[in-house]
Length: 381
Image (spheres, rainbow, N blue to C red):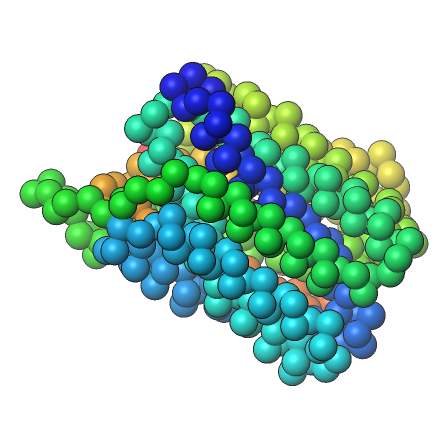
């Protein structure tokens, strides 16, 4: 990474590696762990929705604290360490209420980490040079290794080992955060600085945040229930892990070229193509759920429906929320997309699944993704 230096590149990449490795354990296997604890699909949906609701309220508060105090990295370090407490309590949770409480404690600190780390990384790259996508791709590598290893490992030793595995990964992530160079990130006031309310009133910003919210709402049935859908169709845990991993491997490949793709076609065009591919992905899933070639084809769309989408979204946010608003911009993005969109989507998915089964949940997801595509096409410039 020209200008960034190998040591700093490795440390930034290492944090992404462990963070997304943890997601590679949570997303495919946490619903299976909850099912093993006896929770119903509706209760699982509420646990996932509660985690999403916490992402509505908490990231903006953490973002404001980081922007005002200038201690962005210190917040990342402490929150990374304290996130392990909630997960460490999960082995003691044997009811819906105790699982919910442990996950809310985890969410309190987990929600402080990635929005502020995105702001830290983008600020570092802007100062020293480097391609965001080539740093971020190591998160996808961590996700793949966790998904594949988790599928094979939990099939052998049992899903009860999930919390302990996540705690170890959280401690490694914390160590990566403490290896990063610290600096106060609070910027002095400038006459050119725009207020947060002024930015939020701009139509392009409203459209961007609403589109991201709908896009993440569409991913809720996938994040929360894709593994359960596959298991109910007859796929084993190893196959489930490999299917998750295949999608993320495709994402890794595209991350290597994302910077050049955006330069060639433009941020808006790539963003629209990524959202349209999401519609295709959810529309097609119910028709290929028991057919491996079709599943692989749709999983390959993860390269655009998440990979290209995510790279474009964080760059759009960084472009619109400038100067002292960077931390709050990334936090609002997480709050509205993963928070509002993810929690509403998780609750709807769980309820629809319990009453009608999985297919209507993915039809709802396709409609949400299509609405996000239309909004982006109309208002993003």
